[in-house]
Image (cartoon, rainbow, N blue to C red; front, side):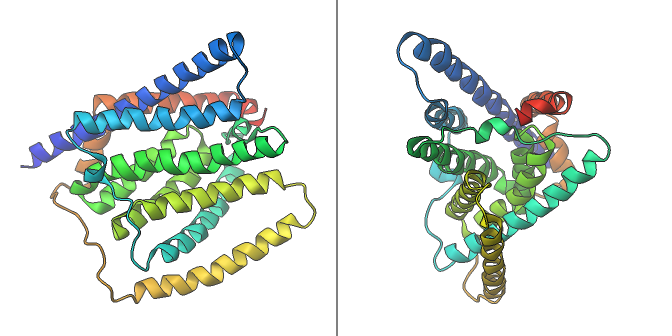
Length: 310
């Protein structure tokens, strides 16, 4: 029985890792086509606009193929229904968790700098044209596109496919892969911590909607903060905003814990130990290839930190 469960987990994990490489292939190929062919020989396209068009296709199509290979439909692994009376609670707490994750990330990055380890978020993702249309494209590419495409993959296909091995394992492993996917230490720390809560919100509500909204709000605020970073008193208003979020979130944390409504049941049909699950999850061809890609990305971010600050 256990050997069958481990074999099943390896198959799911190998597909998850393997199809991420298809995401990379799609992204590189499509950007090459847009940059080198369409922009050169036909008409120029704003780089941010091309990212808006390419990123959802690159993420969603490979994992739609993965579901097809697994003989599943999106509704088999995820739901986008609105949680009754809980959506705002989970979103507010999610904003607080994102703020906590940000503080932890800053501490970790500063600590590693003492040892000359610098692996930061590429500045290229924050580039935009300083025009109304350029700012709109920038916020769409930074907030809307990842909230839909990345949540579809990590809290939808991957977490949903892993829940049969236990909710806690599904939350942890999907958050870990979500963090590793970013390919640098700074984004890994933040994405992993926030990913744990995003997965938790999905398993508790049986809906991917809270995770999408939290992801959207977090990235939107990051984008707005970047745009207005040089505006006088903006940091002061930011502190007021997070102070309000802290107070409201504490109220909703208490409310959720004292909520007597029926909660989503944990899905745990596996009797494998956590160690066995993790070994099966990572020791398979698809996930090993994914880890090689992550190691290469991390190497680049450490060897050439100036790329991230260009």
